[in-house]
Image (cartoon, rainbow, N blue to C red; front, top):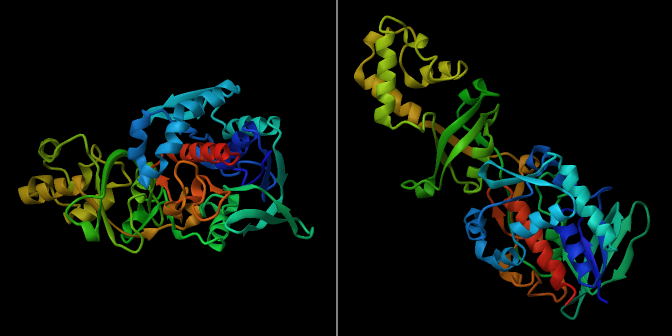
Length: 414
């Protein structure tokens, strides 16, 4: 019976440990937190977006980095398998807008408890409050790990396989502090520079502060990078939020997957995506005709939330007291274009403290995609966010954890 160490008791770690134990391994999880799944607990705003119920072949279109690397893992343990697992273990699921899958209870704790109970039932030894200090190798193969618990002296223990499931660097308060990168680097692996992803944007425009707290539903967003001016790197539709530093919300977080650090980006918000410029112009013209003798500032209530009106007036350059019947055709057309292309300049992203996931990590060039085993060190496996793969929002990142964790756990006993 192979002796297997799993570092990390999150989504990937628990799935890897469970699968390894069910495949005949003697498994120990080492977790520095005092409880399992601390990051799972906060996913989906505490509801846990378990996976996405899209067609498997469509899944890879939502993976932004190295989708081909995930083919073996996802096809061998896909979203249907994940849903079957939780349903068969008593955790009922539901599918919402965008094929997002959540527990019926809307409590992420039900996902954690279901998985953890299965882990314990499979005979996995879980060591909480235990920090792994190093992973050792000998003659090109994993040999042992060293770990400590509280004030206890460091212990060295030999293992046949080690599965690194430490996550990335996002939400470091949950324990994701880049430990896995150190283990991998010390064993000769290349680490692709970690960056925050699925993260809010900081913007140059001061007027965003005036709109702090304003949420806009059903808007369009296009993002252009300075190096690719002619074609948007992202185009989407959904909900966004203005903040004191810039913009956030689901639409913005997804756009951040396509942002390249240290490159300036321009975003254009379409406040009326259901209307073409011509249709919107007719709408604005109708509003103008109905309020010919009113001031410009007093005829915009049907177009925008009240908080947005002063900002739109200022950006339009039209005198707020100007009578509507005095507004020129050129001013009206320019105003329509502003509504369809509200400009924002991205100066950067927020930090890892506010990032849902980490972009970057252990290079996939040095991991066998069919097994999740290191190509450099025999018996060393990786699963989950520690690997250089990332996806859009919608349950796709947790599917990475389930699929790679399952594959690594299965192969670690071979």
